[in-house]
Image (cartoon, rainbow, N blue to C red; front, side, top):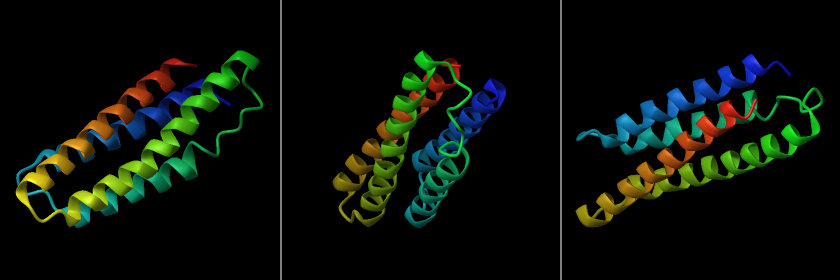
Length: 120
């Protein structure tokens, strides 16, 4: 595995998450579009980053990389769920709470991307 490919893949994911965060923060955010984007990001992660082989990594790196990858995958699944809950919220207070949950999850994922890119 090329460290540059690994860093580049996580940078792309981080950029997508920043874009989604900006979309969620917008006053006219479209819940359906946010759910669609969250699902697309999750699929892209599965296609791109879960496919990176661990064979070329040194033993201490493998464990750290695997932990970050597993946690990122879990958080992306939760992101899609948060987006669906946010989209379906009807009351302004509930919608605001769900929006904050969604943005918090995005910030967590962005932090994981930064940690993962620095792990190589």
